[in-house]
Amino acid sequence: MDEEKVQAFRDELALLQKIRHPNVVQFLGAVTQSSPMMIVTEYLPKGDLRAFLKKKGALKPIIAVKYALDIARGMNYLHEHKPEAIIHRDLEPSNILRGDSGLLKVADFGLSKLMRYTNAIKEDKPLTSQETSWRYVAPEVLKNEGYDTMVDVFSFALILQEMIEGCPPYPTKPDIEVAKVYAANERPPFRAPVKLYAHGLRELIEECWSEIPSRRPIFRQIISRLEEIHHILARARRWKARALKCFQNFEAILKIDQSNSKSRSSRSTTCSY
Image (tube, rainbow, N blue to C red):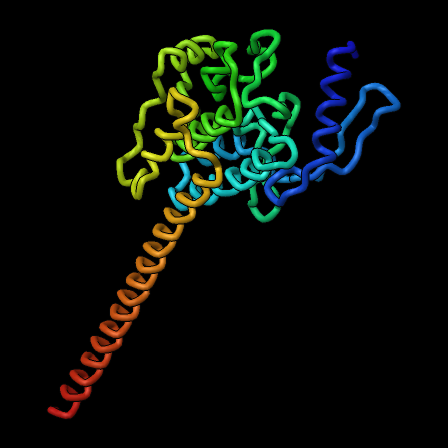
């Protein structure tokens, strides 16, 4: 393993030792005295979000919002980590894992950065498509500009939209073309029915992938808005379930009444003879 990869491994190891949150994959240990060196984390048997979405396709809005809350809570913890904020910088469905209970956890910190004494990070060299998929990377990183925690908010918006649409951003375009599209301030189209983006969900996504990073909401604000949307969707689901149950009860009463009517008619006919 070359020196650069060894340093990247050590950086990720040092980072993982500092973090602990229900929505962030838990570090357990590391193998450093043999090759290859390995980081050991908790085992999440249900795989990653990418495989899940490939199998399931578009999710119901209430499920998409629930998953989005899991991701946002994990990312909020990282961004508010003290004394240094942690920028994931590689937030995409394959780096989000599913636990036994369906809880999502942010994983893979190989490209993460710590914000220490500066308000922005500038890379020594441009990011390459070999390091990560450009399909979820904010344009300021792709253009090798200074960036901050808002790059993760941009990626989050794309993931949330993908859960509702059922397909990745620009699925037919190669990575390099996607990068050019983002740089030109174009975003994936909203093709799903408008009702699936109700209660401000579309507006939230559009704010999160704003061309101007400072206009994107922080994850604490995102969580607040998603919790409100989830509450509305859950309440609507409960009312729908109650209405269905009432209809089924009414239908059962009608069947009983019709059965009783037939029985009375039969008895009446028998007596007339």
